[in-house]
Image (cartoon, rainbow, N blue to C red; front, side, top):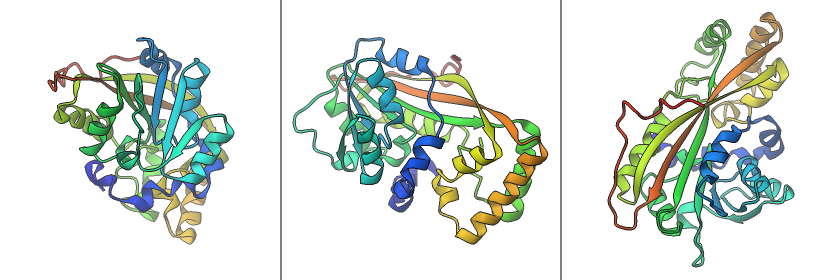
Length: 276
């Protein structure tokens, strides 16, 4: 399913809570520089849209920010609350802010589940004038030889599953480009830009298979087919030594609330070229 329609698949969007503790332990974190840059303007009140188990929210709370999460899945929200994050249940587009405003709106690995028209409008409505939004995703870059071996497994056992998979590095720019385009098109944000930050995470065979099961495309497979696929993927990793390192590119889309309704946009040639 293309990114601009993904938010309509509510079964997938709300499937992550089937095993929220696996999600919490297996998903990669985000670079400190992302948090530093988003808080550089002095934001104290932060709204985390689709906060999940609070992995990103905790990074902002650790810097002293007052973070409120909005999360549609009560099972995920319960884990976030267990980490000390305040969470209100609900889908962001229908959530009632009750007159509250925020200095910063963020969404980590979740904005593609938000309506691309209603989402930016809602975010702008709860931001202080000129306040920033920060939408970010981790996209994996696997070692080339191992990636080729895994691709062969997917072609044989689950053709098409990996086509838009961020965990396998095949999502390309679809998610962050779509988010940037939607912010610009909304007329509610100025200075829309994209930046890239790099970080690395080591995996064992078991850790990678655990991670795969936190992604809705893999978790939604028929159990028998999923077992066969994970066994074959695990076999390829074992053949490569049982350990490998993934480079993650964290793509951050930013903009500032525009009370005047105007927009400006960095050119495609300059967006996404600033590495951290």
